[in-house]
Length: 232
Image (tube, rainbow, N blue to C red; front, side):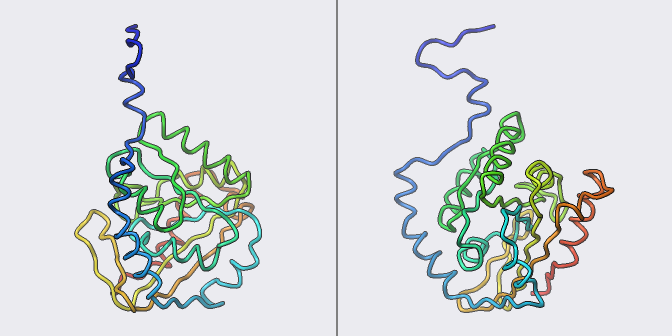
């Protein structure tokens, strides 16, 4: 075993440590942050009892929020308007792309927990479980940071099962939006457009009753796809 020299970082630590942006770069991105905040505030949102607003209002305990990766743009604004009493922590990759996404999360008012595909990912999941048990919300995109699009993984359910929290599915339907040419066709609603939000609460007892993790994952994926409308 090679012992690293004093003042150096071992290769193993470098491999698992998340990549972060410099404070200078974050400062330079502040004008974009202002544009983003004005952009999201200009959007009109429709969120009615038939779309799950009353059900969410009655939900007093911490939740595990689940939505597709391409619906992330407006999530922070939705949380500020309808879940402002609780902090939300989101799990993102420890990669370079994740460093940019962490800045985006910060603009949206969501605190980031950095993970990866290696052993640091397990620690990040444990951090999320702890935070939910402490009374905070967790936000997870089940199709991950790299896809495939609309194929749910079980990470969100690991958090929900360990913390015994309800899973809240979130989706947005857009009146006017653009799609990026990314793996998930990331959706950006246009300024002054309208969004229709919809949520569905999957209670812990109902989701995991007589189901193993894979069966629960399939149910979550099926329910989320039934909510998804890509006709924009």
